[in-house]
Image 1 (cartoon, one colour):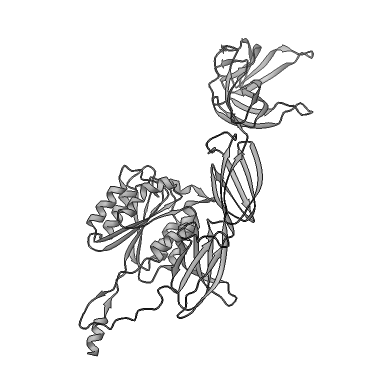
Image 2 (image 1 turned 120 degrees about the vertical axis):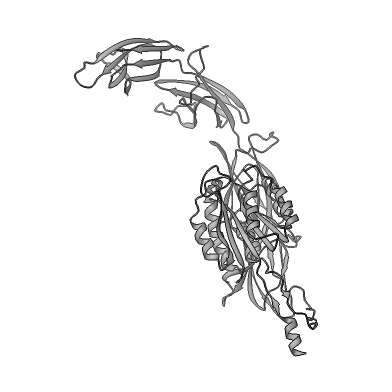
Length: 551
């Protein structure tokens, strides 16, 4: 009977096979918080792979890292196997993102390699972009689910917007997996930890069933730790709010976090089970407010770590005028409270510690700064008015004459009032006609320079107003062709009282084109060797082209 009982308890523990499919397309050079996404991914994988359970069969597939514009640039970098963590880290360290995003083909190849029609298989896709190779990820997921024995795809949208995430989430939803929105390194660590490091091993399969095992005693406590958080004292639990990120550490002798975290979770409130001992729970609210609390797990008792973030939820809409219905997406808003600061573009939605919050808003050169106070637990909505208008800059060669259509013309907005030395303070600038320049409201001057010609015009702008401003540069174009010439100098025909002629421009080569104010000019040509210099006279009229050839 004893032998039969031992045989009944003998089981085969099989490791799940998981394939990480990593996006290495060119967009992975984009930055989050001042760091390239590929660098964040390298560091994150290095951290997470340290926690992979022994025996886990893990592989790596990468796409978009070898050539641009190819939908077949997919490589099985590390075949699935136990103990592959160092090989995966080494391969990812050498990646140079450059190509397209063949999501569907990559996931399909990963599934085939995992023999998904025969064995349980899991794919973890990390992507910062959408499908770019004319395939339907949603349809593929449904096909894999219908053919697979037990096939699952988890998707991590790294830096994707909420709307973009919906377009790839179907890969997870249609295969019974999870979709994770990861907007920074902390969220990426959490997503990979749950899908890779914390992924469960396959259920034990009983090889011999000779005798029924004795029933396990039912534990008196389902979870020995219940963690919860609130925005304010006495306020409601943050519950399923995934803006809260928990990490659980063992406590050292001084009660501080020790070593790597043992578990992480996105949720305001959740329950867990830990061996008896002392721990520290660290809770971060939207990467900006961090709190920690020590707790002790004892046999037969439930520990209840509790965090009060003492914070408010704030929405700030930047507008050019109070009457604007929508926020301006071109506005940059730096928010700062305590020792934390970050920058949003367009509407800013964030949590702030109770107390003073400073906003520094900018639309081009128009800037504004405000400080206000928030209370714990409140929801604050406010507009940030950044008075700014828009100049649509244009130029003409002459009154009633042709428009200047050139990317080389330089426009600059300067203050209308001159300094004591006659100069004006520069406000904003742009190259090319028809561009839009953000300008603070008030009296200004728009200047334009093309070649050796300049022009300016004063204008007045109101906040929220778009105004077309046209500068007459009062100029014509001179084109000179002089075969064999070493240099071409254009000088004014008129001499000053000393008999000198003003040099307008000097160019090297046999051809030159310049934009000049109306008037009489002399073209001086120099040649290499013993050839004597030559001169030619010409007259420039505003709005007209003059061509001079000197043989």
